[in-house]
Length: 350
Image (cartoon, rainbow, N blue to C red; front, top):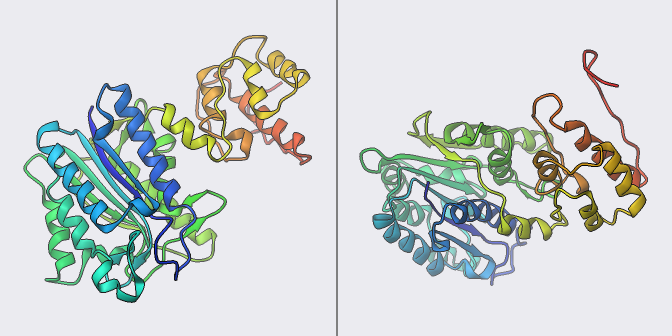
C-alpha cells in the first residue's frame, strides 16, 4: 500500500506577539514518522510524505507542498493520503503559519479555503485531512462562503475516492495541548489510534480511527475542564483501512527526543535506561533467561513504559503482559515512588 502525505506543525513563527504552541511540531513529526517509516518498509520513496515544521511552514511553503503532493498523486496512484495541520487558528476561518503577521492577518494568514481547495486536487483512493487548531470548525464555512465552497470540493473527489475532513474544535472553541501527553489533544488521539485502539489485526480501519480520535480529544478536554468538540464530515467506506504503521528509524528518532530510547530483545539493552547489572539480572530471571518478545520491546519503545507513559497491552494469556507491568513497577521504585498492582478476582495469578 502506497501512502502520501503532508504534515505541518507550526511551533515557531516570525511574529512572536502570540505565545508559540509547545507541541505542534511534535504532533506533525510523529504522524509523519509513522507514515514515512511505513512507506519505506513498502519500498516507496521518501518524497511521498512531506514534513514542514516551525519557520519552514510558511504560507508559500504550505502552498507549494500541497501542490507538489497533488501533482505526485496524479501518477503515484496513492492508496491513502493524510494531510495534517497543527497550528494556531483564528475565528475568522484562517490559520496562523510561520510568516503570518497577526497585525495584518487578513493578508498573511491563509484562509482554510486555501488548504481545502488544494486538497481537492489530490487524487487518492482514501484521503483524510485533519486540523488540530483553534476554531478549526470554521473549515465548513458559512453558506456560499469561500471556505464552504472549498470544503465541499475537498469532500467531493472522483468516483471511487473516499474522503474525510476532521477538525479538533467547534468554530467558537479553542483547541488544547497537554503537557502530560506532549501533544495537542486531537493529534494525541490520532497518534494513539494508529498505535493502539484503532488496530484490528494488521489493519487500522479509517472510520474507527477518526471517530476514536475525536472521542479521545473530547474526553481529555473534559478531564482538563475546558471542553472542546471535534467534528468531521466523512464519506469513508466502513471497510477502508491502512496497514498498522511501522515503527522504524524515524519513529525511534522522534521518541528519543523525549527520552524514549530503543531497546533490543536482549535485556542488557536496558542499560540505555541506566539499569545496573544486578537489576538486569533480575529482569532476566523474570523471562527465564530468554529474550524480550516483540510485545515487551514495543511496550518500552515506542510505548514509553520506562518513561512514565500510559501503555495498554492487549494480548493472549502467556504472551508476556506481566513483564510489562513489572517493568512499570521497576521504574516507579527506581524513582522512589510507590507502585500498586491491581488484579482481577478471577485470574490465573501466582
